[in-house]
Amino acid sequence: MTTTNSVTIPQVEKNVFLIRGEKVILDTDLATLYGVKTKALNQAIKRNKKRFPDDFLFQISKLEKDKLVTICDRFQNLKHSTSLPYAFTEHGAIMAATVLNSQRAIDVSVYVVRAFVKLRETLSDHRQIARKLNLLENKVVNHDIQIKALFDAIRQLMDPPVKKKRSIGFERN
Image (cartoon, rainbow, N blue to C red; front, side, top):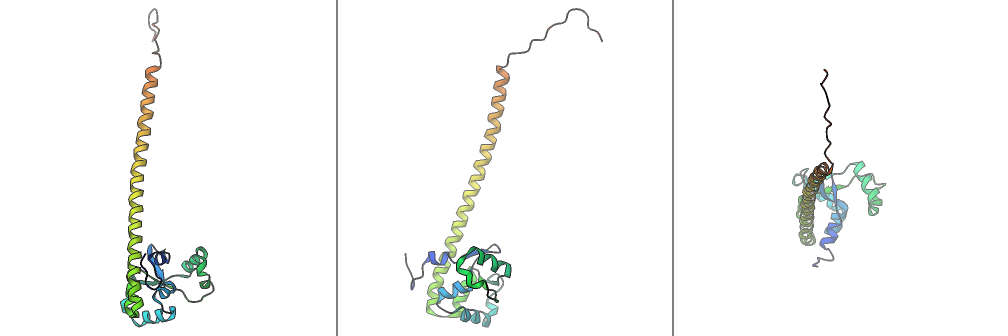
């Protein structure tokens, strides 16, 4: 697999998390990939705030930070941090490369885009598989109902007919 100064698509993929229904990469991970300190990345973002609307970048909440610390050991250093990290969407990560304006950021941004695209394709494949599985499940349920009805009809045919005895005499009301 092609690398840029030891950055690979799988390395980028493992840094992508789902937060608020968005695939994002945290500022610390993005700074590491782009070869800058997190503080320098965040300062560049603040200087260019107009380039980062809410769908490009958002600050995670304390609850979200606590959840990340719980599920991922590598975020233990965030546990006692008073600042909340920023989460970059795919577009925000690319925009960050443009404000950093270093050759490494530009080179690595290509891998960031490829990683997000690959994750999107994987998610799409999973949705298609889930849809097909639901269709198959519905067919099986319908077949089960039809098979049960068939067995019921066969059992009715197998039961001997009940002969009604004729009564002798007159009927009383």
